[in-house]
Length: 562
Image 1 (cartoon, rainbow, N blue to C red):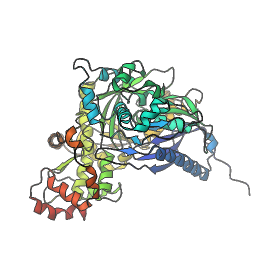
Image 2: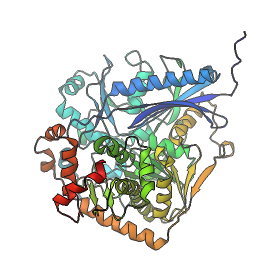
Image 3: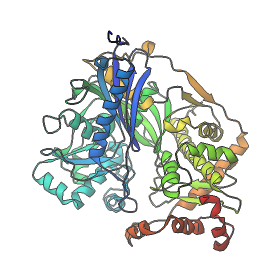
Image 4: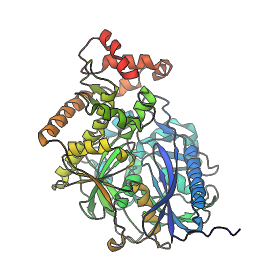
């Protein structure tokens, strides 16, 4: 019997989407932007101490290989010829920091994740050295001095990890964000791997001058980071190197964008003033400001949006960053156990349709935009004897929406022209209650593409459009039309404002909980040995806004753990 004929679909483009919670590989038809197949693997996060967040770089790399191979197998089952995959793009969690040995190819420490707070004392010490009338760090990078960005993570590794210190002294160390680690490994690693990054990822390190588009010696000297360990900075769309192993050996890696820039491209926000909001582990609102840097007066970041080719102009964006969005759902699942899977949150919230006056501020890693307040910590307030886990679930979804409202308000003030609607993407947008809540709280329509994988799509577009590949046109007339789902506000403006103003009261209550000294005192590992019930009971007794004394709160625990 003759073998089935392979389907002819024209040039295909693959995209690695390496996020904080998972790794995926997706394959798109470059002519229609149709998603043909994908595979996903969840990534472990390690919390060795309070405020510390790490991941294993080798696990991340292996997950990429696994996702590529599994997706290729699925394409073969669909009778699609994988030799039609002409390019691969990389999109990645930004700021997360890896230092590895270029001789052995081994990481010298775990990846220090963007959410990690261990560098707070480093930030406080460095901030004392910045003149009040000359914040050269912000003027050069567009970023506030914060634990969020890579430079202070590298500084911590240099100060605290002997293997890193020794490798730097012996000229064996390489630094990179996740994109650099993956591209170096995929293009050969110790056998000629390409050590590079793109302008969007470089702009998140606090070492990169977003005006000259180069590593900045003054910044490197300020943070005490040797420039010899830094990757070469390239555009977001060019051939960096070829895959050296696996089913796609020989395919060029030709696109690289930090995940939020990739989503901006995938949402086709190519014009000045277009914006998108991505709901992932965190929440990130980006507005394209064109070829000019716009500096915020309301707590937003100035960042590189994309540079789609070596000879193409650079575009900039204003960004509002929220640390905890989807991560709060994972916390409810893994830490409190009130849901078994992330999908259950929608069902719980739907049961009650309200938080019943309960407000949840998930400031687990402090507050990012527009506050930049590292002393904040998570609180749940407004509890009564009536409150149960369904109300907590609803409040968690509302928290994501309220945080988005705060950064949208800041963006509207900076840009001067309020957004008439919000384009959204990311895994959480499958939650219809969340999307309706978002429209109600913003009091503008929320517009979601029918194909929500816009981060991977953006990386694929950049890869397919690269010089030497040329299978994906980014000309406006050639871009595929995208069908959208629209959510209109369903409450009146007055109710929306009342709920928002109450949320802001809760935010104020979350601030000032932690100082550097208090966060470093004591042994946080003691909490690891305590039973979950004790953790919940202790937390419940301390939660702000409880109307009853601890004896009645203990009685109420059934509402949360049953």
